[in-house]
Image (cartoon, rainbow, N blue to C red; front, top):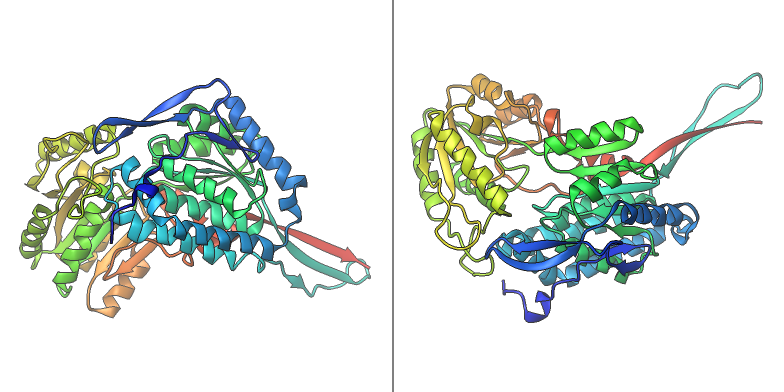
Length: 490
């Protein structure tokens, strides 16, 4: 894989996109963007006001109700989505570059994984665009007259898509593709810490030929732009990915107006390593789940439960693997782990490491900031217990905790003793044990002998504090529609 060309290194202007027009915020306000790998200023973003958000929702509403989009056949929406997928693929270098420089993650990660998955997501839902329909029912006569009853599947209206900073292009594609496929319009609000790739994605949506107002972009702070978007009465659904704390506030506001919501709120995912596991695969897979994107992944398998008979060997091998991780410049070919997103996140991770040590966890490796510019933190491993803070709360950094267990019953109990329930991993060669864990783990998804991102054909959801509602798959598609019943009495 080559590094990005000079042509791919052009930063998009940090403007709003409202009703098909790129413009600055109403009051000219801006937010500074810092390169997390250098701590130097990168660019500025327009900081949307409440009035800017209202204009974006109005444009989306007008296009949904009376615009060209409202009259477009599903096959035409599918054609636009397919064209967008081609453009995402063609501009893969640019999008990966923007994620690497904006987030601090190694360039190879978005180039090899997230950007191709975004293109695949748009293609997957392009195929659904003309296949959403209702049902017919054979019902008894009504009041002595024949009755013909059926349902219609219709788009909700205006969807507010509020995306996180850790995988902005991929997660934006999850929210946009399904909503577009069924005919909704969207106002997207990217995270203020990482908006550049989303701005470029919206430029590609414009280039693909989507009518003005189908997608609108408001950048800026969550406290102003995000809050205004959630509160606006013209928004029919809010799709939010972020922290449980903010998610609860979003749900509280949305519930006042009885809006539909989809919330993906992170996790504290367990990995269970049985005594019969293939350890070479465990070490490789667990290391990736700990340290990919600097551990800033909602599905990070940060709690590793290991059978006592192999706990020492697994610990020794994981410590060696962590020590071999090359941390540095996101664009260096040898780099395996980049920087954390911000000074705030660095302090958060450092605080959890200190708390882990204070509570008696054994620090096996790492635990310190690198002595260089940028928000770089060492790959860190603890050995501890499931009741420690580092095993209970989402750290969102390169920190894993190894916890021994005695048998399957204990492993299941410990894995489910968490407020979260996003994903989980089981490492075993016993198919019966794998099926047992799959049934009993309280999580939205279960991987066996691997860890990776969701495929767009599969529903993505969490239980407990990890969220509410579905994205991706047929479930995520239908979650962007409303079902209407029709009864005709002849």
